Structure formats: C-alpha cells, structure tokens
Amino acid sequence: MKNGIITLLLIFFLQNTFGQTDGRKYLRHYQSNSTTYFYGVTEIIIHSDSTYTWKSYEVNSKNEWKKYKKNKPEISVGKITQNGKFITLTEYRNGNKTDFNWTVKITNKRLNFYYPNKNEKLRKSAKYKRIL
Image (cartoon, rainbow, N blue to C red):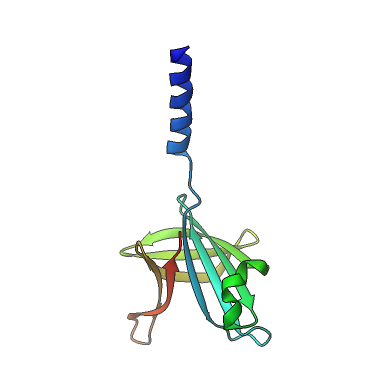
C-alpha cells in the first residue's frame, strides 16, 4: 500500500516538473493612432517552446484600459530566435510568415522593443511591463 502511494506521488510530481507553463506575460497600454479607438492595450506571452502569442486590444478611452479583457483581441503568433544579445520575434499569420520582425531584449521585469535609426544603431521604441 505504501509503495503504491509513493509511486502515485512520484508520478504527479514528475508531471508537474516536466509540463510546460503558460509562459511569461508582458503588457503595454498606449495612445492609439486608430480612427475608431483612442487607446490600445497589447499583451505578449513568451512561451517556453520558443514561440510567442501577441494579443492586441482596443478600448475607447484611457480610463477603460484595465477592462481590456472584455474586448475581442487581434491575435498573432510567431517564433523566437536568438540574435546575439537581442532576440528576434518573427510573426506568422494564418500559418504564413509575414514581413514583421522585431528586435527585442527580455529581462525579468521588462520586454523592450528596438528599431534601427538612420545610422543603423538600435533605439528603444516600446517598453512592456511583466505581469506574470
């Protein structure tokens, strides 16, 4: 009887150890350039299998941004590749690779986007705060 309980506990422990987690989640809210909506919220989830999910929400005003989950997001997925000390996010829509490649740097608290300026130096463009 004791061996059976120990075996079951060991199995449950190993399942939790090797299972994939939902990943790290980063959030940004900002003034939108859209003609119909005035404020945007973007959520990026970095998965442990070198993929990411990008969810973009639009809300009517800055006061409503905390209730962004009520709106339907525009969802994109992509792959993550290491590029020196930076990471490249490549977007795939409907299973096809798009022209969107972003250069980012991931830390424990933030996800920072970079773009090349006219001198080909990278400049920080957007900051995402880690929420999970």
